[in-house]
Amino acid sequence: MERDVLVNELAAKLDSVQRDLMLSKASLSGLSALQDVMSMDKWALGAALQGCLRALLMVRVKACPPRRTARTKRNQSTLTIDHIAVCGAVDQLAAMCRLEVESTRSAGGRVDGRVIHFPGCRAALSMLSCSASETAASLCHSFGRKDGTISTRLLLERYAQQDGKVWYILERNATDGTAAVARRSERSDAVLQPSTGGPLVRATLSIMDIPGLGSSCPVVLRWSPVARHGRPAGSTSNDVAGRVSLVFPVCVVEDAGTDLQALL
Image (cartoon, helix red, strand yellow):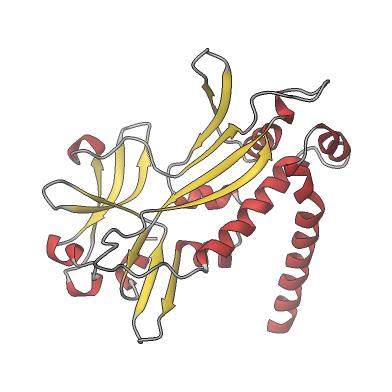
């Protein structure tokens, strides 16, 4: 039975890889690729972009984060996935996932980009159609170092107030202006050793009750054009190539991060 399950999972992964390879060129190309693939799949460009971003994310989360040293005192706070795609691919991805897209404008008032905001990391992973195993590997990944120590990277927003209080922001609710959070003693957060402090306590608070915390979740996908001139004749705004950046908040701790994993 277990073998059958593994065989089915492998077959599904092979189908996914074949589709990603077939469509990856489409998300990088312009009008000709758009015309070629639209007859094959209504969401072809969006699906291609989805697969490319997912593959890039899987590579990044498996890379060990650099160790914090006296020279580099700041830990990594964001993980950014960059890719080049036409605007139509971003619009298709948003439509197929039923996501709200905000159009950004240039100084002259012309529509110039796209922004998609997410309430949390899981929502962005859902947009990428990550499997259960891919989601787990993305949210938390531990790395053993040669000296026997462990570093753990989590897709988790860590926010420190000016007075030293540290919060872990799990999700924001834009409708009622609240945030699902967790926190513990300042001492354990200061040394980034979760296991040495008290237990993490969850709560739902008004964002206004956490001084300095932004109202927008840092999990965001942005698209902006890389070339403002020279659009091919007969093309539309959907065919304009641009840079896609998918940004996740990151928290790195120098242990297994067991209690933080429970928040995810």
